[in-house]
Length: 450
Image 1 (cartoon, rainbow, N blue to C red):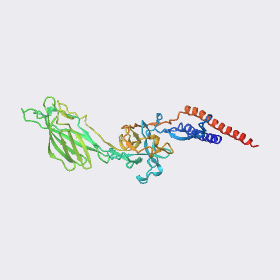
Image 2: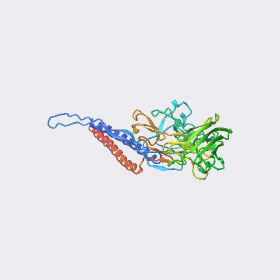
Image 3: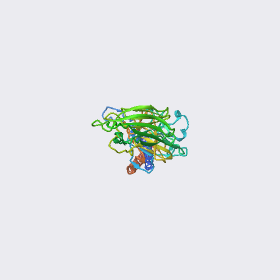
Image 4: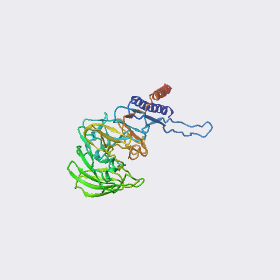
């Protein structure tokens, strides 16, 4: 068995080193492939027959060569260097984790039929149908945001909530106003006896749900006391929505003169209720007046009656000022581009200067990344060896944050691969020499019969 087992061992050595050569060839070929994870092989000896044939003097052991076998290894957990790019939707992960993707072929069907794949990085661009896709056909998956930009609760141990990221390229969007902050000062002298009692108007532009600019009129009228009486420190606020011409209500506002809280709101009392809609209610604790305009709600920040609370509307000195009044929202604008932040929130930008969160991209993780099933295009699939999938918010738990304008490079070290190439070539030649030697020895054995 010695000569024939040697032949078998030599053939096994050729196969093993051929497998090693295959991984080296792939590694070098993909040294410039973003997201490529280096492959290798693990060598293991085959079973060796080691039976003692005799215990007598001169006895020894026989030996049967077992050869060698190899197992492919993919170091998926390894991270390549992250480099910057000029594309906002080139995405990499600064740490552990994978991006959820699917194939372009499975998009458009039922979510249950959607192929879930994972990749560590991707250069995503918007295709003709609006999907965020790589050139190799991987479509980015994410959780769709509500109309107000919030992300609804989603299952974390399942991909059932994930959707292909799609952008309405020809769409126009608006950002309705949701808050008005009345950082203004009313003159204390206007509530003194003998003052003219002139009203102080504050007109604030806001944007409705259709992106149209509207005006909210707030008129502050001082209460002037009779001659010889102290300042009333009292104003009447009338609110009118100019879009409909309807009153949203009237309120009496009294300002404090107490030390430590002078000039701030002491009390707010509703005098006349508004129409339905519009209508308003005031919360003394938060200092917020809720304006209801049917399908749109706007929080008007006046200020709290609590000395330790937030204060916006004041009554001090003799100067009226409304320069600090601000509001949010934007008029309707057309789509101009995408951006992604470190938390994985994907936002669409519009021509009127606002952006809106449209998706959240989670970061996927499994207990054993190296156990993932290897697919084409630097993508992977969950397997029994990898363990179950879990979806994290980027930058939380064990996973890293998401980086836009970035790609992860290949984990191949070309210099190291060339060194291993030389070693593998020598090992292959040595195994070939074994086969040549065995062949020559068998020829000698054959010649003995002649």
